[in-house]
Image (tube, rainbow, N blue to C red):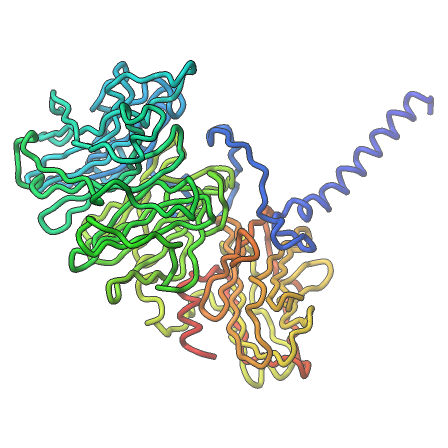
Length: 626
């Protein structure tokens, strides 16, 4: 063989060897929650604040997430010009939907941003051509929120750059949060809108006087869809004390006659709270914004808003919005565990049944990033305060870089939908109402789920030291798995294996203890290997614990529910749930669980499901007992 051909042959041989090696190691390395990685490192992503549409779409291949209603790609697209935000919907008297949104041919904040509407007569599946509420060639018009009155009239409230402000000092600025708070109305279901634009009487307060224009221009925006409270209407918004997005504080407009007064010039408005200062607390920093409000009983109101502290804040008013309690970190129960949320829209809704829903992202980030997946919690009012459930994943996109936000809730004929936007695509999604009902009944249900239950071992079965896994557990077919144990540990030594089906070369499922007094799940199919730890400190020696490890292969997330509480990272880490990238196939391993039989541990029950349980199901199992 001549030297040239030998060199070519050697290069080809080395290349093929590298390809084979890469195929073996790449699936292991690519998992965000990969085994042997640091617990928190799996979710730290160095993402540029780029437009979501620039994010590369991940192939769905042949996968159960194609039929998963939580996957936002299965939703119905709402038309827009390019940029789109706050797709909010009211149901018209004939049952059709009127959607208003902020849109434009450029990016967010660009010249030409304006407010439009569109109508659907088939519950979001198709939409009429866009109708301008404000034209693109006029001043910036943004952040529209709609209200429908008993007469069928639709009002739309939005920020309008009526003073044509475009500079601050010597520099050009975006002007979509400057100017007047205005409204137009439609009496024909959005076909036409009032020729006149009406300005809300937004009085000058302390934060206006100290802003960049000394109160001559006001800086504000709103994301709160108006609520009907008795005979009144209220909606909240955020004023800014400095351009741009600094020194935010919450305010609300209240009208006592908009539901009955046909002459817009005679509508009465109050700006609340009374006095010079809005809803904020200095200890939570400059960023306190996107206030939204829902009514409680007895004239009480509840307000939630975002911060950059890793949690939203909440506040109560007991006098119709005139005064407010000092804002505090939002908690699941009064004085209880904090709700975690980044700098993203935290939306609260009151349903027609008088229950509450809270849209958030369930991690302690402080930036605009990581708005995927969306989590939902259900609330019930008790003694004047809202008590929130453990949350469920509501929506996700297979690409973690896609950001989902600015939602609306639609209710019609006992069914639920939500809208959302990625700033470039707005969609509407039918919601399985059993997911929401599970939120509202948490703590009351003590029922064991039998759907997709592969094994349920107790007593004599566990005493044998091994139990058969009777069927494959292929996550690309089943959508995930759930491993559940009741266990009592006399000691909390690291590495105590509770159940284990690992065996070469086929991977398996393993649950063991960690050095931080938690549980660790490891799952592999012989090619890929992923894992995640529960929050630290969830186990106590001598106590019977209920541990549920859920692998949800739609959003590709691993989570733990320990003693009825979903792990959220607590004070020690940003995320309590972990992502992974591997397309896991059959993870049954040897087909048999080897069980812990050491004196340090006592297994009381083991269940395996070849689907991801809902969090509400895990909570119900805890309340049912071992």
